[in-house]
Figure 1 (cartoon, one colour):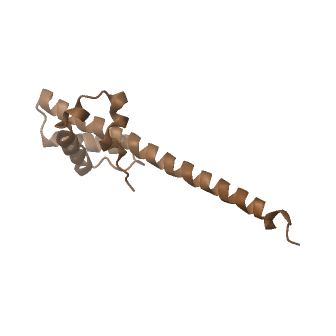
Figure 2 (tube, one colour):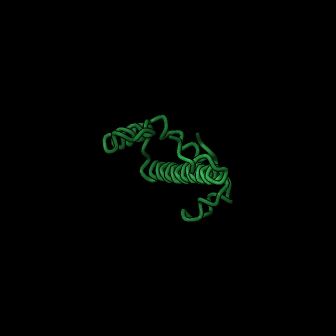
Figure 3 (cartoon, one colour):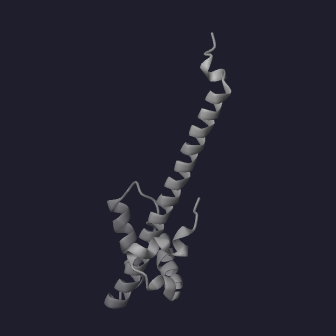
Length: 119
């Protein structure tokens, strides 16, 4: 016997509203995660650039960092030497824009580069 509650327009509208709220929250969560990952990649790129300047470490440095991060975080993707090099290049490219480079880490989430949707 069908439940009479699920047949009403009011109930159907209620479910649609809940569904929209769940989907909205899922999108906001994904955007937030992406923003935090971009901030992490920016910081990794900046730290690689600085260490390479200070210690005159060459390309073997990136390979070693990649190896060590992959060992430390085996279930986390994104720490290949190729990706670390991309982070470094991304930082170098965007740090030329003084409106981004001059901001503190806490302000980075407001920068337009951190609003890029990845997916």
